[in-house]
Image (tube, rainbow, N blue to C red):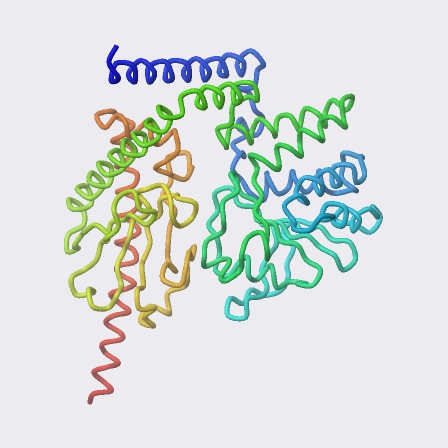
Length: 425
């Protein structure tokens, strides 16, 4: 039997068994009734403060309605403490919060007026405090990083403060948020997929007879697994073993998968571009210099007379990476940090140059990421009504933003030119 035939058979076996594992996971999920999730039914599964921070803080609070005192808090500290340097890091961390009477947990805690220049102030998602010791948790599900956010939080009570950056999969904060700070040294990355699930499963063992508390925690674990696309433990292990058996084939599929995604994304960007050309008269449209797989792949839209000013509109990132955890947005880019538009208030600022942005949303107000399975399913079928609807949504929201801001920018440019003429006279 020839080598190409053997490789083809191995690829087929890998794909067939992967499908079997995923299908088995789906059957187990249905059999256990895990498709029903209260957080999802109520439409609150992605609310960072009202759902995630609130739920986590309630469990962490020794005075919480669970009535378990500091049991859940200690388990949390044991899990995240392993990310801290030092041989006795876990013991040292938990020792600071043993005193249940003095320990408090607060959400949306103000540490003063935000000042990006001095890198201070802001509002902490979750604060755990005992006397002068405190833990700050910055909770990111889909929200964008703020300017100097991690720097500001790290500077708060800096001698006795530990900052944890919590995301779905443990990613690093944006450079504009952390500045020169290093994860693992000045702050610590933790994830829902690993740390929070591990902690909550430990909590479940502590409340076998507390039905309401147990079921609430279990529902929340299922929500996290849904948001992070995590299989059941048995299926996860089986899939890992399968891929280990077919390492070369798994790597081949991974490479082809990336190529396929980039092809989908490139076509989608082209279709959005064509729609905007039809609907935006007086604007020029061009691709950014980055390839479609680059985390900052974009479309530039601008008026010809703006070219030298550094002002232009952008839609980014078509790669599903980059700013804001890869979620698509439209914004006004100010390359030279021009003062011309200083009178226009910042809106959902991403960085020094992206001060005016707007997330692009589906009809049910979910953010659009061109790497998640829901978007990829649509991108893979460009003839479908779902694909065309996605193109319409992105193009229409972008057009409305561009037209609205173009009027503001034009007024700014005219005002600046008028000033220059007066000065010249």
